[in-house]
Length: 464
Image (cartoon, rainbow, N blue to C red; front, side, top):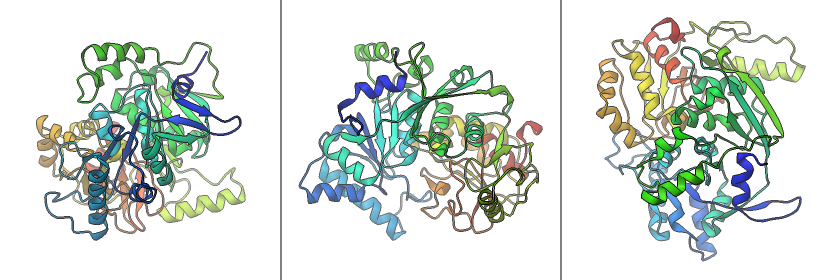
């Protein structure tokens, strides 16, 4: 009896050393402009080629402008990184979706929407949120630049086998509760280190009822509680999403693939190293109040007090609240904010924009709010136009930018100014993550939409 993780891991094991690492075969390798240059330089120095170029896909996303992408990139660091990525793609014969390409976008969004991401695969990228692809029933995880070089050269990687964890969400989600809220609740309960050393499988009625894009959001945030990655067993929802995608199997190959994918589930009675069970029906919309994703509360709740914390914990807690300008015991609801950011590999898909647009339809952006709405890819951008969402958003006073990672990590011009509050649909609220001195409050697209039209943290259930 095996878990889903065990089945995929064992099928990709080339060799393993007792009490040591596994040599794991990698099916799909994604690269972007920030973590790959040194890896390609390493290949040059060793006079090596890319071993299986058709299994590596490149895109520009992290340090890219989200305005005027048809014009020369002005930022010299960004320009150098993008030019280097193009040169490396050409020299090593790799597929690149450069800025402006219709397939271009955030790496963890373009993989699934083009059908590169499939059940049963092993997938890596020089980016921690590679765990997103686990939503399809794949083992997907982030790697460092030296490991990027290893995969380019051999299509394999050395990895210690993680332990397994299952997190079950029983019941149905309540009104206004999304996959983002599931994730933030889970991290607040388990802490940012609660799954360190584990690969997590998500199960239960609430998970089965999520669409594929919501599953991606949940798996994306797995690493924010220390997990190596997260995955969900593929089902009809998965197959329906992939059917007809450009790089998904076709015809007879599709039927064979689906037959195999249906075997990718945890066997009855298989043992996990650790299990947690949550009641999804008790979860409310969430917001963070501190400087890590585990510092989250229900939107109707209050910031915790110092009670029960040891001296070290109190110091850390106080430092976090001082940075945010908050106090223990305060309510989060009603706090004024300055910025709203919708986008990133966590919440930059069409489903997220539908949620946001449907909420703001017929309303107006608050005057005190600067809003950055950044699609995760050009395909999402086009869908916004095709579905009439673009018009709804602009009618409500919002500007839709061009695809990229944008204000998620403030590597480009999209930076929240020091001291300003941003309700953000991204994955991290670390000090300075969205700009030096920026104060980030993580939330779902629905909570972000409510904040955008009211100018303050607002429970969306009270507005619609």
